[in-house]
Length: 79
Image 1: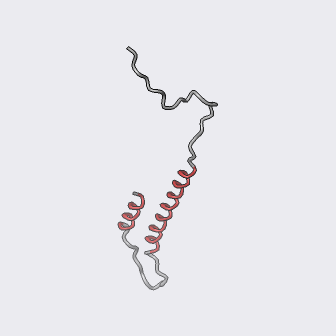
Image 2: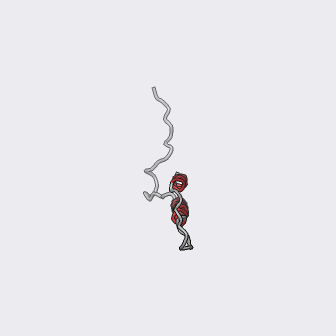
Image 3: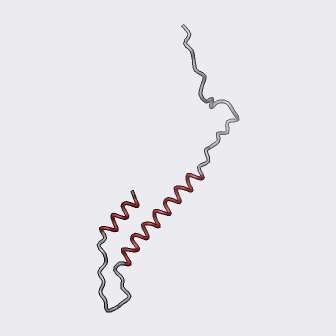
């Protein structure tokens, strides 16, 4: 009994042997762009926390904001 055989979907043995790769430039560029944006957002978040403890008036004593809210914002950016 002969069973029907489907033709191969892709024959890798045919051709010149040169395998073409997919163009990944857009994927790499998007990944680098997202990393730059995330690092920029983290720099802004922690920069605001760092600057919250500064005052230009030398007679005034300023306490820095609690870091909890800034860590939540950094976690949201990281997520």
